[in-house]
Length: 432
Image: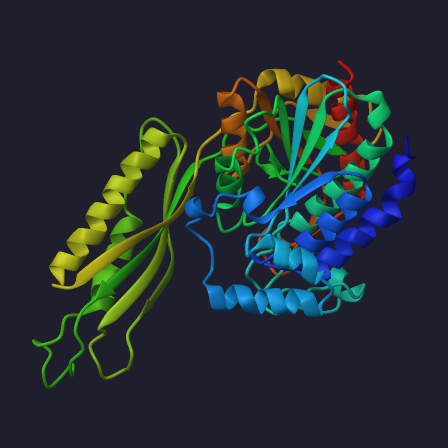
C-alpha cells in the first residue's frame, strides 16, 4: 500500500489545478477528462456520458450553445478531446475497481462543479497570491469541490494500491452539477447506485453546533438536509406609456414584486424548519414604459417532504394570485429539487471508529449540521431504499471567507487526511 502522506504534494497540485480552471455545473469537461484519464491509468473501469447519467431527468442543464462554448474552452485548457467526445454533453465520471473476490460494493461520491461567481483577484486572497485563482470569469470553486475532486483522485490511487487487501468492488462517483441541482439524480436514475451496499459522500468544512467545523475535526453523519425545490417564474403583461395610456398596460413588474414580497411572508410550519426565498427578480424594458415582462428565480426548503409540499402549495398560490391582480399571464418552470435525507447510525459508527484512530482528527463528532440542501441525498436515499447503508461526512477545515463567497478558501491540510479517513473506511468495510 502506498504511503498516503507522500501523496500530499500531488493532492495539493490537483486541487489547485481544478481551482484555476473552475467549471460550472454540466460543464465540467476539463475536470471530467482529467479524472477519467487518471482513473484509467490506475486500473479502474471508467464510464462517462450516457453510460452513467439519464439525461431525461436533468432539469437544470444549460442550453446547447453554452455547452458548446464550455467544451471548446475545456479543450483549449487541456481537456482530452477524445474524452470530451465520449461524454456526449454529459459530464461526470464513474470509476469501478473490482477485486475479483466476493464482497460488498462500496460507493464514494465526490462533486466537481464550481459556483457561478467571480473569484476575488486581490492580494491577501491565498489562491490569488499563490497563482491559482480561477482564470475562468464567472466561475469560482467557492464551496470546496476542487478539494473534493482532488480527494477523490488520491483516494482512488490509494485504493488501487491496496486492492489485494480488499474484497468486493469499489465504485467512485465524480458527480457533476451539485450546485445547480440534478447531477445526482441523473446518475441515480441510471442505476449506478442500485448495487451499492455502503455509501459515503464527503465535504470539506461544514458546521458543528452552529460554528464552522475546523481543521483537525470531522463530523461522521448529517441528518438535517432540507427538502429543496427550485422554480423559475415568468410574468407576461403588456407595455404602454405610464402617463399617456397607463390603463392600457398590464404591469408584469408589479405582479412579480407583489409575488416576491408575499413569498417572503409564507408562515413557518409547526412541524419543522421552513424557508422561502426569491433570489433573482428581473423586469421591464425602459424607464418610461410599463413593464411587459418579469422573471424570478425562487426556492422553498423544508425539513421534510410534507413541509416542502406546504411551502410549494403556498408559493404557487401566491404566484397565481399576483398574476390575477395585475391581469398578466404567468408560467412556472420547475427546475430541480433535492430530497431531505439522514445518515445511517451503523455507517456513522464505522466512520467514528476509523477517524478516532487517526492522529489528525483531534475532535470526532457523531453529527454535523448542513443547514441547507445537498443532492447527495438522492444517492443516499437510493442506496438505503435498496437495503444499503449511507452517510455524509465532513472533514473539518479552517476557512477564509464564507462559503459561496468570492473570498472563500480552505485549509489544504484537510485533504490528505480526508484520504486517510476514506481509505481506512474502505479497508474496514472491504476486509469483512
